[in-house]
Amino acid sequence: MSKLWGGRFTKETNKLVEELTASISFDQKLAKEDIQGSLAHVQMLGEQNIISKEDADKIAKGLNVVGEKLEKGELSYSIAHEDIHMNIEKFLIDEIGPVGGKLHTGRSRNDQVATDMHIYLKNHTEEIIKLVESVQGAIVEQAEKNIDTILPGYTHLQRAQPISFAHHLLTYFWMLERDKGRLVDSLDRVNWLPLGAGALAGTTFPIDRERTAELLGFEHVYPNSIDAVSDRDFILEFLSTASIMMMHISRLSEELVIWSSQEFQFVELDDSFCTGSSIMPQKKNPDVPELLRAKTGRVYGNLMGLLTVLKGLPLAYNKDMQEDKEGMFDTVETVEGSLQLLAPMIETMVVNHDKMRLATNQDYSNATDIADYLVTKGMPFREAHEVIGKIVLDGIKQSKFLLDMSLDEFQKYSPLFKEDIFKVLTPEHVVSARNSYGGTSQSQVAKQIILAKDKLRKL
Image (cartoon, rainbow, N blue to C red; front, side, top):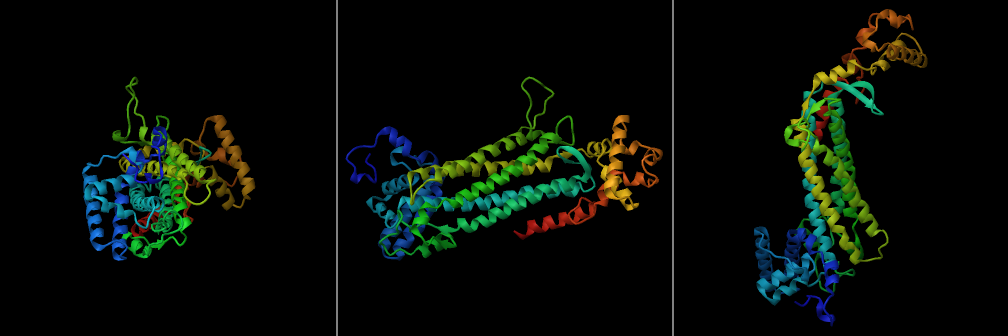
């Protein structure tokens, strides 16, 4: 079958070239957006009297029929028509005849594909924002239940200071809040309409790009036709934001893997988010967080791939830019799938309060508070730091934790120690004493939850 663009050519396309250049195997994901953009375009063509009102109406009806067939799964795409735009146009011409060929008046596949991707990314960015909020809601729900749950806080993966588990979880709320802010902000760059830029220089027809933007719900129109067809910054920005978000998801996933291990037993993941071993019947593997951790790599790869594609391209459109879509589709699906799993996994996670609390008794994470104790008694902090270091070393040699030591043992190192040191050393006191803004005390965490809920209500 002859190409819709084949008038200038005397030979058929080499079959290997046809396979290389065709994008219909993946850009068919843009079918809905392509029809949506075409409906707005043809309405504008009719209103501007570029084509007759009758032709515009006939084309619109034909596009709606094609859209209905799309919804029913009745469309069969052909590699001979290369991409989603030519396939949709062929479906339209088959439906209403040669008048369907008027649809492409005043536009090019260059501005058409850019428009499709703007519509696609706008819709999916808005959906991802909702999914981020569902994960944030699950985090807040678990945090409310665990304000008084105490576990060791870590630096360098070494026990550092006791903290509220709610405080630890809420860290991920604020990571996701920044991700959400980047997504919301990126919509301003997505909300620019390329349609009407033509191949690169605009069109000779008296189109009304502002009217097309209004019909499609775009807030802005690209003021430079070359930029309109060659810009992929909006995709790069999305891939960058998605990469940062997946890094956050990966960090949380790593902790879920560690916490659910036999060595920690801080949490238990619901059976529906774990799998077993084909040979070891006792195993309960945290496959979901492991895979979320791993999928971060493919999102990073999609970002680096597109950056590399674009880095040396001259203006305006080049066929290289066909490589912009698969990574975008894959990232959207990866991010949406990850968030859809993460929310219920957090919601159903069982927190082992006793294991966490026991861990804070069997370490030296309350050592800083002894130093602070001596400072309040008048000892300089550097001197107090050295004293406590010696006490900890002595405890390690004796296999004793700080709460197991007697007052006499403390007073060997300083007469400033009194009976009240044992209250200071309790994990509950250590946590509640950190009452500065943003700290881990129960009252500060309660305020933080109120602030988090307010953020969720405002979007």
